[in-house]
Image (tube, rainbow, N blue to C red; front, top):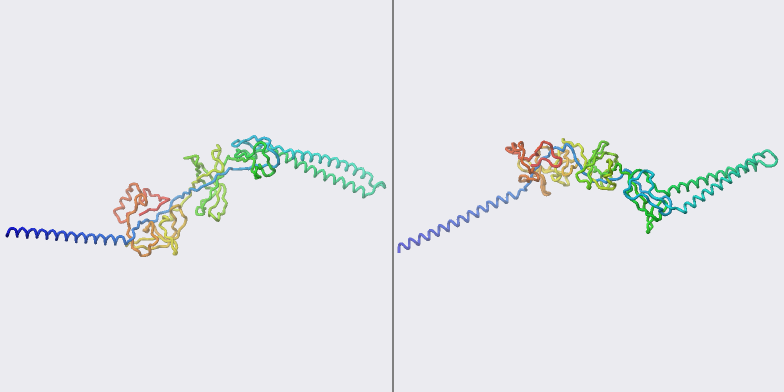
Length: 423
């Protein structure tokens, strides 16, 4: 019985020991979980932020803008006489010179009016000659008792009136002669025919062009001078300072991938569009081979000098509130201080900061809307490929990693025009 009792006591002791171990393990796990939860809660109570620093502005600014290409001269040609198209001689795409015949118009009504005007001129000339002869005869009898002075003056005045009639008839005949010249449609200058809207037998109206079945009128032809092209670019107000007579630009068009055309300044409107706040600027580009066509779309690339003495920040670092534009600065104790800044020109994704920050300030890259002055934050490393360069860090930056400042600097010393030095 004593052996059985000893084994029972041993088994009971073992059970008690296992129960105590399990209880202690459970208490330890609960305590560890509690500590971890408390740590996570404390850590989550502070907003996680990534820091950047203001960087020097770019040494030059770049700007890509949409543009419209127009011909150097573009002339829609309308009919100046009414009639029917007798024949056309130049089709679209034809190269023409000034004075080349484009089409002829058959105008029987105008021809009849021209013939009548010439006949009226002949009648007026005959009457004028008769009046001159009569006036000379009466003038020869002046001073005799055969005629009175009144009758002499009447005949002289009649001759002058007939002369005026001749001049009126001559002007009328010249007007119809000029209209007869408009029966031939000619090119106004050297260029290319870009439109032909007249066909043989079409009725054309004087001053109104080709009359369609609905009564609307269009031009007969359109001729463009394309030896050089005009490029119209709406330049935003922030970049209006780059517009000078020395301005040059690079032109790219979709149909010529990889090719660039050099454009130079021609004129500017010197006034902003109230709706778009842009100024219409005109450039010119040589087109000796006629590769550029009128009314096509283009992208114009400008380059202008920048000011590296002015700091820049990403637009995402700005806080827009009733107090004005602010940035969130972080001090050595990770406390936030909202600082009012004054901005300058917007450079794409970045903006010039004229006052309020220094190059050594640590700023939150994307502050939240609920961030308040005095809040404590938790600084986390930047995201690789977003605000940390994806390539290997340069040796100079590696040397600095031994200090507290762990900024990821650019590979070269030149400031990037699109991004500041980010932390």
